[in-house]
Image (cartoon, rainbow, N blue to C red; front, side, top):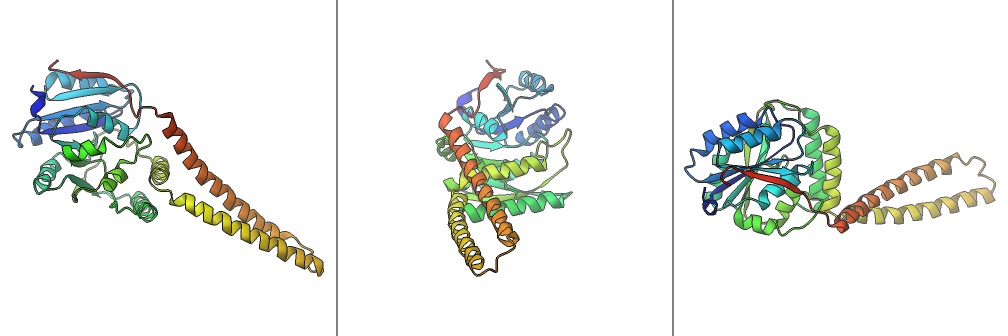
Length: 311
């Protein structure tokens, strides 16, 4: 296979997806054959503990278009996608999940939008079976993120997207360790658009995105993409200081005139203020943790092995 003439690179990170890979590849080939263009499919094993890697390597032997990148451990979905991006050669790059909730048929529509002049084609998800709690949480998260960071990231913008090689070259210049790729893609600019797709139920296995993980990911995203919470902490600390002085003065005056016999009221206020202080310390510690992680300059991923049929 001539690696210098690849039109499309599709990057698929996977972690314990043994029941999905074969079906996904079959569906992808049915779609990609309609393009009549050269393509490569990059499967990135993000530290799977089941038979996913074994299946991926069998697919490499079966299809010359498939490459398998084996990471040394689980580095997270975005870092796995980054590994695929750094090893892709296509003029267009598409990232997608391995659970078949990202329909391969949407790829044709994404390429149509690229041909209309867009460097980034994002997608917004519409669930056939809506989880109301999860949907509302995601909407609230994006509303808060856009308000805090000054970005305009649309609700449900996923890792299912198309980017041009020109855009990717700029994207790979960003060397952040703790990445929020959706925010970085919005920050880079270029001509972007959004298309909708309907997500089917996961083909097999269980989702890795539990509510707890979504909450933690939301906190990481905000702290890695905006310093406004730190400014808020500064303003809160000033308010706390002023209120504390006023309480002390108020309590002292009441004591002097003999009216202060029960300290419960100032104690309640002091407890509330103490809680706010601890919250502020928590926010600051989150940023200090980010600085610590960035200062170590560890790689976002480590590749253990790359398997290619044509080598």
